[in-house]
Amino acid sequence: MRVLYVTSEAAPFASSGGLAEVASSFAYAMRQRLITCRVVLPLYEAIPQELKDGMKFVTSLSVPVAWRRQYCGVFETRYKGVTYYFIDNQYYFKRKGFYGHYDDAERFAFFSRAVLEMLPYIDYKPDIIHANDWQTALVPVYYDLFYSKNEWYYGSRTVFTIHNIQYQGKYGMEIAEEVLGIPVDRQGLVEFDGCINLLKGAIETANKVTTVSPTYAQEIRDPWFSYGLDPIIRERAWKIQGILNGVDTVSYNPETDVMLYRQYNTDTFVEGKAANKLELQKRLYLPERADVPMIGMVTPMVASKGLDLLREVLDELLQYSDVQFVILGSGDWEYESYFKEMQDKYRDKFVACFGFIPELSRKIYAASDMFLVPSKSEPGGNTQMIALRYGSVPIVRETGSLRDTVFDSGDGYGNGFTFQGYNSREMIEAVYRALGGYSNRYGWNILMERDMNCDNTWNKSAKQYLNMYKELLSEQ
Figure 1 (cartoon, helix red, strand yellow):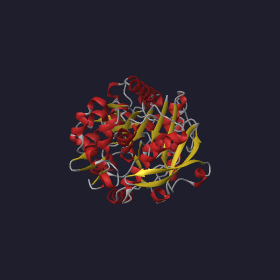
Figure 2 (cartoon, rainbow, N blue to C red; figure 1 turned 180 degrees about the vertical axis):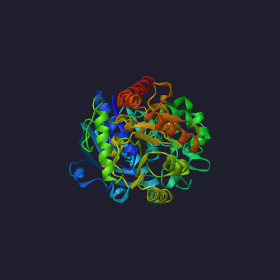
Figure 3 (tube, one colour; figure 1 turned 90 degrees about the vertical axis):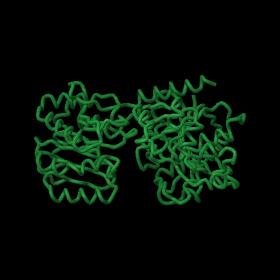
Figure 4 (cartoon, helix red, strand yellow; figure 1 turned 135 degrees about the vertical axis):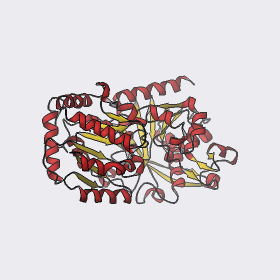
């Protein structure tokens, strides 16, 4: 089986969030199962030069973009045994950052068309073309419009994964023919609510649509989660399947993680986590106490991650509980400002670190006793799975992938503490239950060991994707 994984990001080349890590982990997991999976993404200016130096030029071609044609260069490299292709066009991709430009619709229309156009040139005919998020949503659309009846392309099947339905690729209808090159009589594929909606086009045309957790596949049928697309989701529910993302357990392994102050495993986690907590306390100028429970958060500082709930009760928690709280991230000015104020008010209990600091995030996972993820929506996040891997007991809201991976330990068999409603009182009660559990050190150690033994690898996810691919191919 041949798979082409089409993405706007892939680690370590280009990364602004979880999609990049998923792309590289997914491709590697497929390779481990002897499946030929190649990845293609834009050749951004921001890709580190040392990685560009390892690429080789493959070919060049001319790509149709509506009524005009544009140069496309194809470069290739290998990473962890996986072949990666890069689509080069300096006008579209020699810019600062990946997204947020005035002509993003045209940039990713070019990329989507170039992906399909390059295949005969590189002599790679995939059985499955797997696109991701709105930036590549035109891949199944273009395949359906221009390639599906072509003899060379015939037989390929398209899959589209929604990582976050909030981002849909909405534009005015005036660019449908002039920029995207979609014929007038087929523009209904991408039209929704009076405008272009690229995500809707992918849902309409892909042979299969997946989301990044089973719960999220159900949630997006509800207007609360769908950002307006629930009618399309319900209409096409027969082709939508939720498959939980895995976590890279080779990279996230407390036994080998060189970024930790001390490495540990399921036999040495009590001493290992204590040593990591002590060193993090020193670094952040917190009181050096082994007995105090430490709560960690590594998160974008935006409302959708539940920070509005945290802001309502954080003062209460810090004022009346013997606890230390460490948060790392960046985002909205209002939250960063609020956390700075709380740090000034509770200097012995609360520390906020701002920015994207990978080594510090690893240290927080290893040092914290609990890890808070109170998200309003969490399609397929992996922070809770990383926390489990490092023995940091998660406290989460039951939504999306959080509901699929964290189960309340009130029955003596779960791996964390959960709450259902999106309100601050339910959240703080879950935190208080966790703090109460921490006071029973014997039981808490059992819970930590159980967490570290949770199986959130790509093994199960990859098997489900392979079964889905095989079903698609057998339907022809």
